[in-house]
Image (tube, rainbow, N blue to C red; front, top):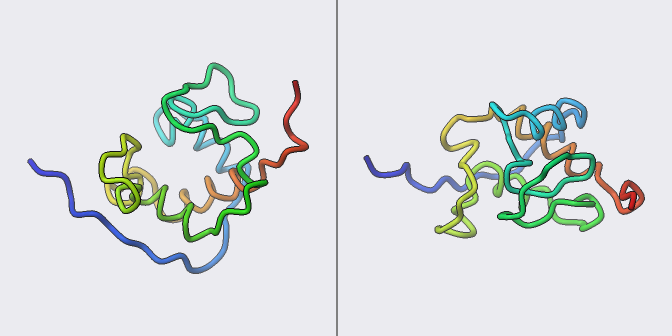
Length: 112
């Protein structure tokens, strides 16, 4: 069975709840972001994906992050990241929660 077509999405609206986003990002059955990414406050993170440490300090547009989470193949057809939105793994609200969590991560959060 071929993969679904690449979904281009448009950012509209507001960010969600950062606490719910953290729960989703750190939850194995939901986001499971720690399997591949290093994230502030996460234990035993993976290194196959880029670090998300202090993500909020990068000043990336919401539209970029929303597309990456919804269907990252728009930017990289060979990406190994799940298509959270296209495959219905996360709802739009859950994606916005994860975004709120990521944008809450600032340089001042990093503790050596």
